[in-house]
Image (cartoon, rainbow, N blue to C red):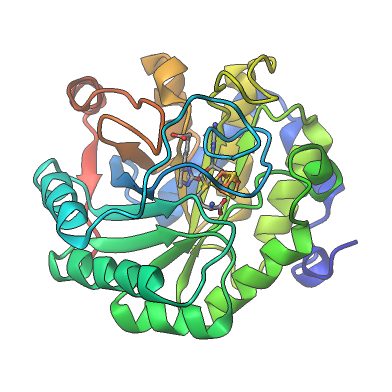
Length: 320
Ligand code: SAM
Ligand code: DTB
Ligand code: SF4
């Protein structure tokens, strides 16, 4: 068993039991927890920008950006700072509260490219947005440097349960992911850490992932729950779609286990109905990605999200 799994004593079997409860009982409890800790009709809006696309040396089986996957994605160099700041300004004008920059790197290398990312962070922070980056593995010094540049959150997902991880990626392991999360914490950054449903895992691995996240001390401030976006040319292009009820269950369990976190209904919304998304908000999801695209794949249009928020009387949540 992983050392973190024992920290708060939340066992995988306890989470399995939560996930197995009648759906409406589970959602009812999660909605109660949500209302105790959060404004129920507010949803945070985060916007993504891929600042370095493709050519990644990791072999993540779901990812369009892995050099192992022949997805036809055109590789691009690290963007220039002014380009990123233009996008960030537009995101802010469109109502985003947090701006997340992603790089298809295995890990962070010290040097001019990392310095440029720090400059991006400084610039985005100066625009009055919350800042988040996801750059792969990083060490203590690099985490501290990002903190000094004004970084609020570091995104680093565990993706799935430990028992299923080897089926998803072979070029890195679970403990390396956990080590980066520790380095991020030591630098005083907030942690954004979650996973993906639809990687061929079963309930057990989902429960394992949630227990692992909930046992982190402190718990992650942000928990993105992604549904696999199947990308042609990846080994997971034909994976079976996860039923919407399973997504609702995982969101509800995440809310119960991590009452203070932002639980983000992340990738996969283009394939969801308005009703399904509404059920996720009721079950405790209080954050989404907005904007035309995620990193390399589409997202619901800003117009359709505005219409959904209007129908549900949901207001964007603005951080203080
Ligand atoms: N390379 C860095 C890393 O892996 O940590 C940062 C970028 S990576 C694209 C960020 C996260 O996006 C991954 O950890 C994964 O959880 C998510 N992701 C990537 N491809 C996805 C897909 N096709 N569907 C859903 N989530 C995906
Ligand atoms: C997260 O959990 N989901 C985002 C963000 N963190 C970096 C990424 C979703 C990527 C979806 C597939 C793509 O667009 O390439
Ligand atoms: Fe690289 Fe991140 Fe994609 Fe894995 S998920 S292939 S590390 S960009």
